[in-house]
Image (cartoon, rainbow, N blue to C red):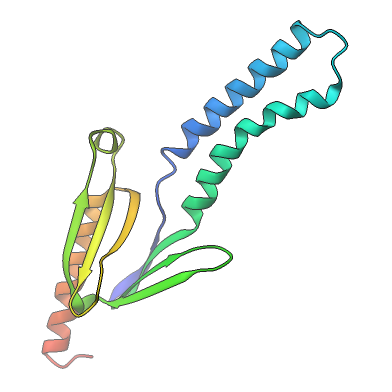
Length: 153
């Protein structure tokens, strides 16, 4: 049996977006006070729009969860409405790690899981340490298949 483990996409792309948004916001506030000619104060709220992009990225990141639960993998997507797909670890046939050059530089990648008898692959994008996670999934799949072959489950 594997321990329960939860994986979300990485924050490595979200933090720089927050930093850039903060820099743009403070530059706009500085420009407002530097060149103000009786501008209304509500204009100071306008630059807050730059935070919409990193907030959207953050929410999208939290909306995807991959869980190792005993001898099952569960991929859940969505917040208000959600899709949940659970696959038996023994049925995992292929785990693919895809990394672009930029993803390799920051240590993230995409996982694609293919299982026996299921249509379509499960994928989770931009996870930290994708190779280690893939190795864990493969080891769990082999262990689960061996236990089933011996009649353990």
